[in-house]
Image (tube, rainbow, N blue to C red; front, side, top):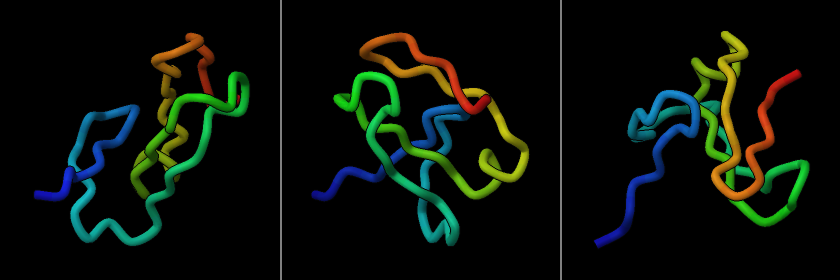
Length: 57
């Protein structure tokens, strides 16, 4: 069974979430950050689980 990605900021499952993104942490380039469309629009803060980097801003 395929694992459903969860938003790094809200822990919401991303099922049919058009506009969501998955990218490497801009600081450590190791951990994967998942952002829902709503979290991106609201600029909700996320924390990298590996290095503790906080984004956005």
